Amino acid sequence: MTIEIRPVDASEIDALLLNDQRTFGLPPHPAHQSRSWAEGELDRTRIAFENGSIVGASRNYTFELTMPGGRLLPAAAVSWVGVLPTHRRQGVLTRMMAALHNDARDHGEPVAMLTASESVIYGRFGYGVATWRVALSAERTRLRFTGDDDSGAIRLVTRAEGEAALPPIYEQSRRARAGMVSRPDFWWPGVFWDHIGGGPDKAFFVAAHSDASGADDGFVAYQLEGGWNGGLPDRELLVWDMQACSPAAHAALWRYVFGVDLVSKVTITNAPVDDPLRHLVTDSRRVRVDFVNDGLWIAPLDVATMLAARTYAIEGVLVIEVHDGDRPCRYALEGGPDGATCRASTARADLACSAQTLGATILGGTRFSELAYAGLVDEAASGALTRADAMFATAPAPALLSYF
Image (cartoon, rainbow, N blue to C red; front, side):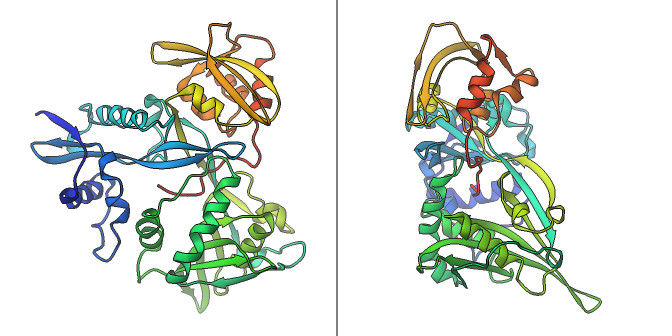
């Protein structure tokens, strides 16, 4: 049968949601939940049809990616990617990914980015792991915090209050860390309040922090699960979303979640690798690392624009040869703390790597030398790896503390 790749229209939303349910093994989309995320930017969907029925889905969203140095780079946020079990290994995914990348180029987006439901899929499409996420957990009663108490205040907010208060906090916090992304207006109802929040049957709470002057500078969204065991509370507090505009607000939010009563364990599954929790407590061993997983994946679509869009920790010059399929291209990068330029070059390469590897290193979340040890970067000029590591270093550690 012939497969057609095209956008959906508003009349096909039900079929799109049904495909999402089938490809990801989800329950039906609850009737009470918002469809804002499903209905956003339908012109950027790239859906596979066979005889008028959806057999695979994919889409781009118009996002911004925070680069080292704070520049906000236009980026295609790839989402909803899935093929029905009946149509796998028939080239459907390959055609959809090509269509998404063409769409991103048409929109002037130099990178495509995604989070992977399965980590074995996207390397072959040019994506590299640019950020890492850490899952942390600790027994609530075992943790004791050091330092002074918070000089600000924390309040629990209703949905109506949160709809007004949270987006400005996030907008400020996302600019301070490379790897963070924008949250369009249609993201909040469908993803934050309904998907993460889960509806009226879920024990979901949001607390906002304000500094000593009364200005909001952080929030934490969390879920409570479990009950009582032998008459004792045995509940887990799962942190879904923690955003802070300052180290003081971040520390205050951690103090708050570990102060919630009737909780035995606190868990977060999407913390940055440099989260300070273990340094805020008297016994760091009580903070357990449950796993370290890939976070944001990046595929370079316009290498020169991408490399020029960030600042670099030290002044330096590098000629990087990038292999994208059978088309090796060289780029002369000159950058430093004040900015960078990058252009095509015929000069002798200092380093050579794939586009996937460059996507992994662009935010500083993975070092060139680390990937060279794995055979993924060739050092053509002595000292180039050391120079590249120093130039691309980023603080704070890049992280995607969001979902899309």
